Image (tube, rainbow, N blue to C red):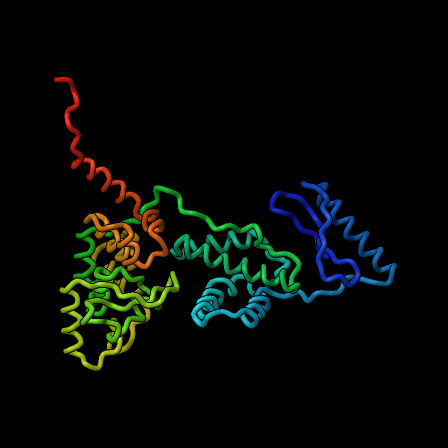
Length: 346
């Protein structure tokens, strides 16, 4: 039994009658009066239940860490989803409030988590996904009667505000970064600029030399965000020739991106040092090379659906929402080719 507040401000008591499995709610209105009334009813109910010789069954006060572990143990998740969820929880969520009881968590805690993720430079999509995981875990807890109320039940994914286009790296910045970069980062930059793959463990760093299909003229990529099977990403002849030369020079090479013979797992340190050497002070990320890839294709007049598939987007709508400003420019350019005959009177 406990007192809670709904999204629209109404206070209620969540309780069970005798040994009933279903949790019931009794509402008491909004504001301070509603809260006082709910607290009073809860106290009266518990006192009456005690006099009658029965009380509501005690429920263990699970911490968020304990609930998360029960969720992971019970849910039939794919290995990739399970690994991703464990990584997110251990890195971002459990260190903040994993030891707290679920009943003590509020939407304010989720807001603080979102602010911390934003300061780390996480995109809105990533922040939405992390918060959605937290909500799903608590929803599962409610459905399985491990907790009474989902403290994050009011969470809804935020949407990007129109007009916030990605900051595109300029050609001069690209040249400066490439010149200042160490050899392994230079090669990573070339691969990203020619493929647009996501610079992370599931795409760029997971690519192997065996993923290059010289006969088909492309690269087999497993897209991390769409969970789609591997797709062949066409490559320009120039980059295929460079990869071929690399395979000839290093016949035992396993990974497409390596450093000192080992798989590269992060570019953050090398990237930051390179930006300093290049004299670039504004915020640029390896991910901006992916934006450069997509924007370059669209500026050249490439078909929107084709660009969406090349970038591994879930739909052309996502591509359009990200690069709408370029599409608008193309529409205006297209108008220059519109021929309207003079329909005036002779």
